[in-house]
Length: 409
Image (cartoon, rainbow, N blue to C red):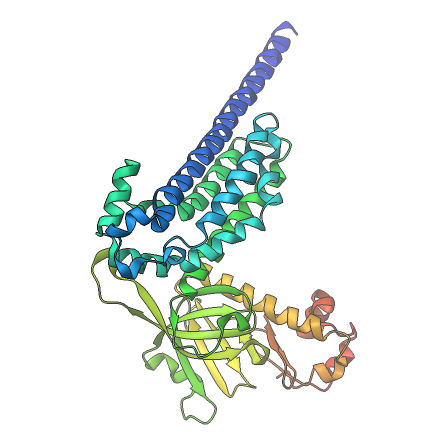
C-alpha cells in the first residue's frame, strides 16, 4: 500500500511538472507574440515617416524622379491604415493578454474584420512592386535609407505586412501545441482557422489583380473563393468528340478563378524578366455563370478529374487538378455555391418543377432545373439516401414519389 501511494504521488508530481512546463512554454510564445508586435508597429512607423512622409518634404524633391512624385499611395498602399489599426487597437489588445493568456484567441476573433485591410494592401502589391523596380536605385531612396540607418532597402519593409500575417498563424499553432485543454483553446483554434483563411484570401486576391483582358468589373462576380491551375478538356454538344476520346487529346493548361457568381478561365503567362522580377499574369479567356453549371465529382481515368457541364451539357469541361486535395477543396466550394443557390430558391419553386430533369450514373445522381443551378450527388441509391440525407439542403418533400417521373437510368 505504501509503494502504491508513493508511485501515485510521483505520477501526480510528473503530471503537475509537465503542466507547469507547458505554461512556461506558452508564456514564452505569448511574450514573443507581443514583442514582435511592438517591433512590427515600430517598423511600420519608421517606413511611413522615413519614406512616405519624405515624399512630401520639399527639401527632398531634388532627389526624387519627377515620375515618382505624387505616387506614394501606389508605393505604400494602405500601410497608414494598417499602422493605425495595430498601433491603437491590436497591440493594446495583445498586451492585455499578459495577465489573461486565455484571451489571445479572442483578441484575433474580435478583430477579424479589421484584418481585411490586408487584402487591400496585397491587392495593391503588384503595382507597388512595379513602381519600386522602376525607381529602386534613385537617390531619393538611397538618401532615405541612409537617414534611417536601415540595413535593408524599402522593398524588404514593404513585405513586412505579408510576413506578419504568416507569423501570426505560426505563433497560434505554437500556442495550441502548448495549450492542451486549457481555457480559451477553442478560441485559439478558431483564430488559427481565421488567420489561415485570411492568408488564402490574400493570396487569391493577389493573383486576381494579375488578370488582364476582362472587360468588366471583377467585383461584380462576387467574392473570390479559389484560384489554381488545371488541365482542361472541352467538349461541345455539336462537336463530334466523344467523352471516351478525351484522353487522346492534349489538354489546355488553364488558371481558374472561382467567384460566387462565375468560374473564370485564364491562361497563365509570364512577363519577361529575370529571377524574382519575372512575375505572372493571367490572360482572360472566358467565364461560366455559376447559375448554369453542374458537376460530376468523379470521371473515369484519373481520380484527380471531375466534370463541369454548362447549360444542360451544351458544353462539358473535364478538369484535372494537380492533387486530390486540390480537387476536394474545389468541389467543396462549388458544392457550397450550388446548395446556397438552391436554398435561395427554396420555397419559391415547386418541388416537382425543381426536379425538372435528372439521371443516374454509376457514380451518383444528377438533378437539374431549367435555367437554374444543377448539382451532382455521389450516391448509391438516390431514392433511398438522397432524400434521407439531404432533404433540407435541396428543399423538396421526403417522399420518394417526387422522383417517379425521372429518367434515372
